Length: 286
Picture 1 (tube, rainbow, N blue to C red):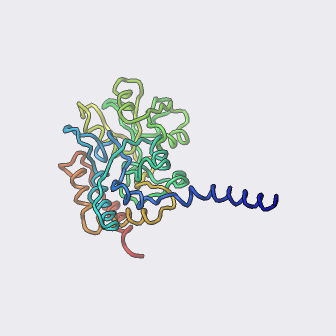
Picture 2: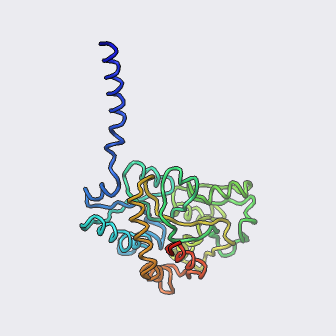
């Protein structure tokens, strides 16, 4: 009898451990049940995601979700859904995903090997590289001229990691978000702010006096942006990728790109022929 009880106890323990895994909903099941796709995005990263003068949360990344990803999810589920947005920052975005607080990170998140240990990424939807924002009269011209200089970066960013590795004599200061870093630069607490070039151009365009600032330096990193999601959820990853691929194939992607980055966009930033070829090559059958 004791042996039987031991076996039953062991079996019960195994079942109790397995139950949470068996009960774990996929992202599509969660969206189907709630009717909501919750995205983590930014409130101060123009033109990818920001709050505009009308107090509306808008941007290129948000449009890609609303006009490319959402329709494919609705087609898959056979019903309409709505998109809810939550603020996510470099330190919080992976915890937001893994805790199920959001379903998709749609902002300015670089797809890196280290991050792929915790999350999965969609195909790349934007490519940029790290540069510096400085005052108009600054002597800083790129990464080779920041030795001993006070450099601001966002916490948890790939830019901060590269600065530590390549220029350890720079006096790196990390800030929780872009507004805090820019405020430090504007107040003279730091000499430069490093971030992905496109974000710096967006920040400069939104500054009270854009002419007071300049973006300098060649790219010192390669920053391919992807939309991040929970690991090993292949059905959801496939739906997100189909949405992005259909947008590229139909021309919707380039229409949205012109809206935000074209000559009349929030941040003029021409799409290079190389980047356009890269986007198209991602959807060409191999």
